[in-house]
Length: 299
Image (cartoon, rainbow, N blue to C red; front, side, top):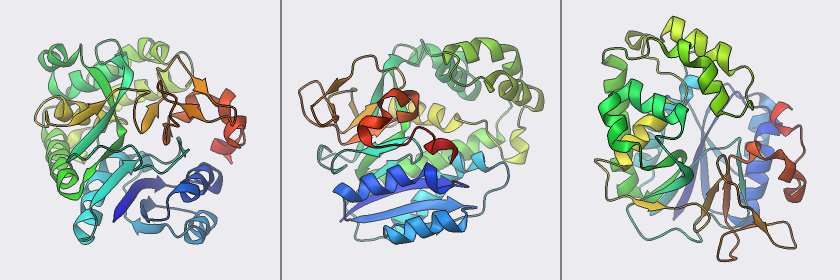
């Protein structure tokens, strides 16, 4: 049996409707979302589409679920003995065009690459530097970014991955803080986003000032991706790494080439329909092709 496993914290119905409706167009198997602080209306949508909740407590702010989810994912997988393969996916910025398992290789662990290197992305570079230091960034700088929001594999392969993610998260929480000076990079990091998140300079300045002390058990937003890349380009070197636009996922932040068919479906380079579109919020000009309302992320 296959499993789709994601995370949903504090989301209004508009932030998940496109995910659950498109998923259930193509996939009738088991789906579980790790949740926290959901309003009743959102819970109702999950129930309507037969998506199970695995509710956890998250210390504020809610974005702490980004690192808490890995332990919860592991708990879910351990409890489901009959799962053969699973796809760990983000929710708010994901849309399905086909069965997510349609193009999944038979491998213990599969990760998906973006169209940019770690060294050429200031944000991903910062996560690696502040978690593992400049030497590790030098090792990984030429490697393509692997987005932690879409990771798949066998039950055993994913349990090993989640064990290592939890180990690294725990170690990062207790290690010497490398976040000092992050606030000083706020403007350059915001520039790396192309101005798409105008509140980022203030957010990063707050992070730099507060430093999110690891003795409190907190890590900065997105730190899990730094850990993910450290592992799939290192200890988990057996991971099958799928380039963008040739497999089950298109990760769209750095993507420049888009090929559509007459039905408005986004295609891979070989003309096949890509099952999972990730980071769709970076390209709202395409929402109408998929029947998504422009204001969905704020409703």
